[in-house]
Length: 479
Ligand code: FAD
Ligand code: SF4
Ligand code: SF4
Figure (cartoon, rainbow, N blue to C red):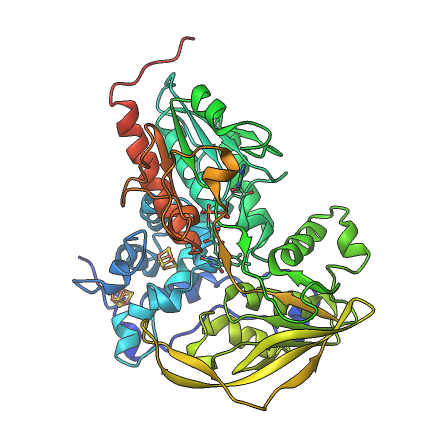
């Protein structure tokens, strides 16, 4: 292995691509990190020590061949780096932007462990594929012959799209059904543009369309087309519907106007940024402009809501979370970005109802908490401090408490589809095969709310299993 130019981590400090200043980035929904300059990317890639046992790769859900594409980047052999990177990842430029690298590849880099600061793996991955798009190295998908078999995919999120890519490359006829008007799932309507600009997602969808993947949008399976009809129409079906049931809050005035669900709020904002007419945004229901905003929750969804509210021109934005900063589930990097942009975090604070006037929310009744003994998961459980309640004034309260699966067997009238006690679809590990013949499942609907990179992994694995199911001998479609 050629390691010249590598191992520079002792002399070259870790450096991320330039980040736009907080005042500048608050003015728009564009991404906040600029691209690495070529020399900087090569320099940062050269910090890798080319581990014989690369822990970064072991902790990447896609087992990306990270050391090899870092070495090629350091050597200026970018096209080869791209070829290797895209072998294991359907959307490397998306993962490079939004994977929580601190918990995955970068968090396990040995250089990080040795105190020198991790190799900036995600930023290099993004740089490689952005460059590949720019230089025309990302080639159209060319199916290997055309097979007669067809697969119906329910859900155009990362899991469904990754599966569509693998299946179409193998020549299978692929139709993707989605209840939304645009494909991309949470990549399009959940995650805000400041983390992932939408043209990055749309060009991937165009690439699939150009390869012959059919998209049937505004089609809610279970309502517009029955699940059984879909099974009858295709040789295999993949369920990749994600999880959308919002965890809710009770207490006084829990139904007051001005209390909104995170995904409704983020979707309205993303739609507005696409240039759509969004009545609930225009009439102020899902718009933070001029309001005191309180977001409840400590995960990535909450971080996206607070930062969206800042960009919409809120007077103040506070985030209430019942544990402390060290015990929050959201990415530390995103929390820091939010703090820089002016979000105030109120740690150890839990909502216990709301105040309202004339049916409109005026505040959150906040209970002060402290951390007690660790629970079964090892995290310290929040305990109530008696008598320390107070009212946090608010004009808009966004509930960002996580998502659960919808009851698919009931919604779709398929009692036979086995689900777990959490409501996720029961599917075999590594293949996504459900208990129904020819029905597979992938992504959040199997794992519960998870990550884009795991959706891609599942989509790819399920597509491979579907190809096995369809049989190795391709039936060539009639001309
Ligand atoms: P989804 O992306 O949810 O896509 C499912 C699709 O199925 C949707 O388009 C939906 O319309 C469609 N669908 C559902 N039911 C039906 C039906 N009956 N008929 C037709 N279509 C249907 N992960 C990260 O890795 N990094 C992040 O920074 C990050 N940020 C996030 C921010 C927010 C606000 C949220 C909510 C999630 C975030 N995640 C993040 C998680 C990530 O988005 C999901 O894990 C991932 O999108 C799951 O992919 P999926 O394909 O399983 O489902
Ligand atoms: Fe890291 Fe995600 Fe890329 Fe894997 S896909 S190398 S976890 S950024
Ligand atoms: Fe390079 Fe870090 Fe991966 Fe080792 S763990 S191969 S140093 S990126």
